[in-house]
Image 1 (spheres, rainbow, N blue to C red):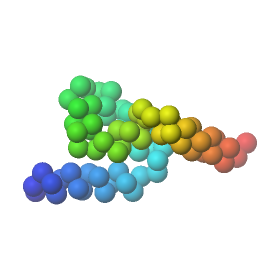
Image 2: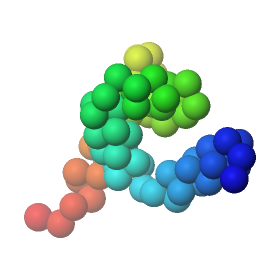
Image 3: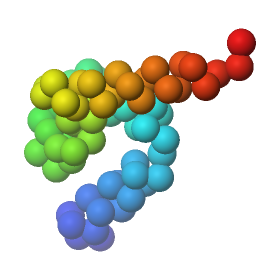
Length: 75
């Protein structure tokens, strides 16, 4: 399998995940080692930005999504 095919397969599997699960997995992988962090930043910048928002707009979007998840849970 070529590198491009492998990266495409990984991306497709992560796109299928819910946002919360995808963010948790990306954060866990990135925190395991500096190499993982660099790999994710290089090949999956959109997932990295989703998990570690740097812009105010991205952070606000993530926080509003998180609020929606919390308010949707039955109490």
